[in-house]
Image (tube, rainbow, N blue to C red):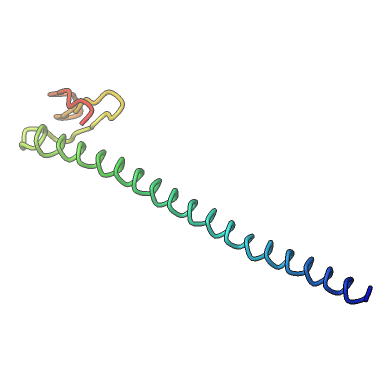
Length: 99
């Protein structure tokens, strides 16, 4: 009788360990899903910042310095100012702001 109780107790402990290991992979899966979603959100945020910078620079090139009177242009993203150059000198500048 003692052996049966001992065996049943060992089986119960084994079942508890099996249940704990079943739950561990679920926790790991949830953590990886959360990390995946956060990385996708970060990528979208970075891509939107890059797209916004390209759009602003395009506005500077086409809308502000687009006519043929200027040789080159420069958009300063920290100040939000578009500079148009003619023969190496600043010929025109305008504030485009934080667009």
